[in-house]
Image (cartoon, rainbow over all chains, first blue to last red; front, side, top):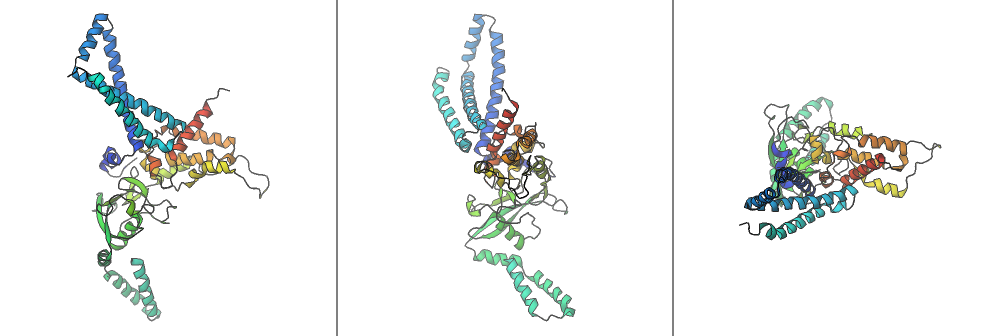
Amino acid sequence: MSQSYDRGTIEDFGRWKEFSAGMWAWIFHKFSGWVLIGYLFTHIAVLSTATQSPELYTGTIRSLESLAIVRVLEVGLLAVAVFHILNGVRLLFVDLGVGLEAQDKSFYASLVVSAAIVIASVPTFLAGAF
Amino acid sequence: MSTEVKEKETEQTETESVESSHQSRRMEQKRQRASQRDLEEEAREEIDDADETIEIKVFRFDPEVAGKEEPRFDTFHVPFFKGMTVLDALIYARDHYDSSLTFRHSCRQAICGSDALFVNGTQCLGCKTQIADLEGHLNSTIRIEPLPHQEVVKDLVVDMEHFYDQMEAVEPFFDADELPDGELEEQRQDRENREKIKMSTRCIWCGACMSSCNIAAGDNEYLGPAAINKAYRFAMDEREGENRKQQRLNIIEQEHGVWRCQTQFSCTEVCPKDIPLTEHIQELKREAVKNNLKFW
């Protein structure tokens, strides 16, 4: 809305310490959504250049997997995807009008469950990376 | 406080001679006494007497007065008493320190919806927010600001015009398709339907929800939680009839209607009347879908 003066960070992310659960859920959902879209396009780009021959494909995957940064990013990708799925389920319930009074708890639950899944996946993703 | 003192003065002047020729002279004397009476000194004494004091930091801004056009914060020390609300603290500061401190208030009991403020980073009603409930109220400063995302007129007073426009856009009045035949016949509502709309009828038009809404901040055309809740209140009222409900759904299902809501729950968090706003918006979304998807 129009402002007669500049209120600085009062009206944007400057208030992040005062955000409530629903707001954080929205921010994380947006963020993870954009990350997933970004990943989707890189994924398509890498695969479409690597599917020329079986040797090229294996070579591409092997060279990618040999990079430590890619291994770490894979954990990040899993974290983002799992949270987006779980919060998506939460939003589905919100859309259906089920359990709206527990929306903050379901957000915390989706955070905890994604954290658990991500931590459990670390050995698999990072085995032999360092 | 100051009002009590004024009453005493009036009594004094009344006991003096009542001759009208002396009227103007007495009024002049009264004015002088009032100006001599040091309200700040009074406040200092009261603060010394008080067991606890609080510090409020109030947003100040007055575009019409030279030297006050720059937004700034003023700090006031206020004696704390049990049951003190944010509005009480503001009234104390205005009466004792700075009579130019401007804020809206009327009923002081959370029903007029005048004093929605931004206290310590959340929208709330000044008269409903207990100072004792604010975290660390005795050690830290209580920050009081006007509602965000609304144009500030002066100090804590914001321009509510846009909010009222959005409220009126949903035609917030009961308008039944058919009126009963008999002149004295009542339009009965069954208990279940009344329960369904009960919470939505409690809106006091304070604008806290609209101010907290991230989407409304970025989209001036978005109806906002309060207006959609108002639409819900009438669309769900079974006494209005199918025709009217259809018209109401046509209003809310437009591009800047219910579909802008992204379920951040900010409005539901801040509503001083505990209206489940998000729930109502979501229900209207489902109604709108059902209205347009017909397979039978």
